[in-house]
Each structure stands twice: as C-alpha cells, then as structure tokens.
Length: 527
Image (cartoon, rainbow, N blue to C red; front, side, top):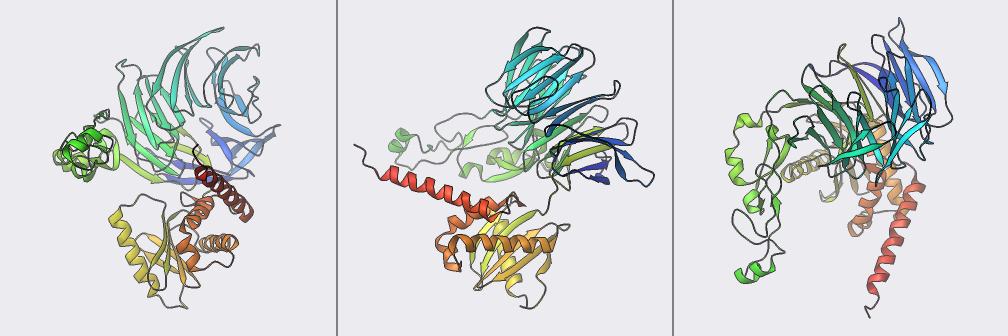
C-alpha cells in the first residue's frame, strides 16, 4: 500500500527520504520521473497516480485516474511522455486472456511487448493498434526484458526458465532457453552495453548470464532469505541491486573477479571416503555397511557424505554470501581473505514487489505491502522450563538455536510476574505473555510494534482455543503437528498472513479431510 523513496543505495546504507501513502490496496509498480521530483504509481485499487513533491517536502497526487480493472504493471517512456498500463483483466490496448504481468514500450519500433498469466507474450504496434504476434509458454510468463537494437525479448516464466525470442513484425523465432533457477523467475534486467542478463527467482538466488560472451558463462549469487522480486544493474558503478519479498536490499560488487559455481557431480558413493550412499544396495551388501545420505560440496561440486562435509563457510567469490556446506578438503583451502563479503545488505521497511532507480540522482523507489511485524522466532515454554513448540523464521544454526532457547528460558522464567512483558536481548526485542502454564515468547526487530505483537500472540491462542476447545498444554504436547499447521496458516516468514479465524478453520478442515481420505486409501486391501 506504500511506495518508499531512498537515496544513495549504491554507496552507503539507503536513507529513507519519503514514504508515499494514499492507495487503498497494494501498489504493484512505481516509477521515478526523470529530472523531476515526481513518482508515478499504479495499484490494485484501479488507480493511476502521479505524485509531485510540494514545497513542504511531501508528495501529493497531482493526477488521479481510475481504470476499469486493477493495475498490474506499468511502462513509462519519459521522452515521449507516454505511459502504458497493464490490467488484471488482461487489457493494455492489446488484450491478454488473463492478468498482464509485465510490459515494455519501445519507441524505436513503436511496439508494446507484454507478458501475461495466460502463458503468452504478445507484441503490438502502437501506431496502428494491431496485434503483430503472440507466443505461448508452458507456464505463466512472469517478467520481461527487451533489447531495442536487436529486437530480442527475454521472458521469464513460473517454471524457472528464461526464453530468448527474436521478434519480427509478423513472425518470431526461438533463439534459446536458459535453465538454472529452481523456482519461478521473479525479475529480469538486461544490460545492453555489456550484454549481461540478470535474473532473480523464488529460489532466493540471482544469476548473471553472460549473453555477449557466447561461452555459456553464468555466475550464481545467493544473498537473500526470500524470493527475489526486483533487480537492477548500475553500469557506472558496476554494482547490482536486488530486492526480495522480505524487504531485503542487497548491493553486489560486480567489479571484482568471480568464479562460476561448479556443476554437482553424480556418484553412488562418497567421492572422498568411498562409503556407499543409501541407494547403492550392491556396495552396501558387499561392504556390510549402512548407506549414507548424499551431500554436495558447493566449492568443488563433488558428492560427499556428512562426515566428509562437516564444515560450513561463506565463499563470496563464488556468490555464497551465507554459510554453505563444503567438503573438509575445500574448507582447508579457503583463506580468511576469501571470506570477505562482496555484497552489502540493507533492510527495507516493507515487502518489496517492485523497484525503480535513477542512478544520476542516486534515488531508488520501492513499492509493496507494508510490513506490520517481522518475527525472528516463536517459542512456547512451560513453567518447568520445557520447550513445547519452536518456530524459526530466520536461518539459525542448531547450536545457536539451543543457546537462544536456553537464554530465553532463563530470562523469561526469572522475570517477575507483574513486570513489563517487553525485554531487550542482543539486537532484538523480546515480547512474551503467559497463558495458563505456557509462556508464548517471540523475538522481533527493534522498530516493530510490541503491542501489535501481543495482539498476534492473542490471536494465535484464540485459533488454538477454537480448534482444540479450551486448549491446554497437553493438547499441544500430543497434537503438536496441529499447532504447527495452525501457526503456518497464520504466520509465514515471521509476518502475519491471515488474521481471520474462519479462514484458518476452513484450511484446517480441508487438511483433515485430505488426511482422512489418505488414511482410508492406505487401509484398503491391495487385491
């Protein structure tokens, strides 16, 4: 419901300059107006608004236009002062059969190229208004980039593939298909100067494709905890800016030499100690040993067992900004200077669904839904100090989890009964509340609302009480999987997903019906 304007994201921590609010529903796209203090936004509330900065420093809507259907995407060309809006009903001027997911306007060819949830990409002439061509995919087409000089279109879809098409006035040809992501493509960016394509996906990764090099070179970048929904490459500073659904903004230094991540090798036994994996029945029988689980070293790509890959480390040269599994041999070869981060991480204030930048002025605008709270963990602790339920919304090692649980138990149980329910711990705020014999304890970020967190805990207890009927500690002990299911329907990624008790109850009923159906199926005789 909001768009935020930040300054200098490429050189230092982004500074929030303004927050534009006024839409009654989610903002799907926001574009900075070049050489002017203005922003154009489109929203699910079916409005297009042009916000200009007043003398007071605030942005006010100078132009307000309502269309027939929710606005899903936008393409703005400043020189010709033309703006094209894609809508939920499939309309631009050209018609899709479903929601328009992305669109690009080319002044040189006078084309509008668009993708939609009808699994197609289409291009039309803006002068005549006629459809020039259409190509269908096997899944939703989610994002698009277009090269004006060569008339090549890059289309990412929900299957994780990127298709390169050569568009002509009445025909087209498929050049190639790029496969590397394990999730749906969320964002694309094409740099026509260096001929590099950047893609972000729901597998939390960014891939750089060297199209101009013609050698199939790809660089994997992993520095997000949620799906990547916006990418932008800055040619002057040789930096890549990527934004994710959890509000994370990562700035990658692309001016340093990087290594390609190796392909994972296939093997029936550990390539270090030669112990068989659990599917290698013959070797297990011959050696009279139990098969092991297969892992892969992120540095050399070899298939190894858990004992031979017990170490974790960062390796930014290969794009791994977070700790990943490596074999013991590769771990010994990595020096301390090799672990120096090549990216900087910043935290946005909301879910980032779209991002636009003006590098000349050092401005970045992001839009998405406001983030109410962001939990890091939720713990249920009994009066005796026993852990009854734990949910972690951020990556934490097993050793760190045990340490956090121990410290939370000692701190919460030792706190006087009539004292404040808010505590400061490390760089987090701890909010807890006692219900009967259980303490509901959660950790959240410093800027989040404590009173709202208490309401979230209250709603979770109400959901448990509605399902179990006067819930008690024994219900959670003997039906812990139900408690986790209710929590997953209520919170996702540490943020509130659904507040309706009716909607959560319906989801629980559907899950139980499916479980009963499977039990009946499994209990039937096989004859």
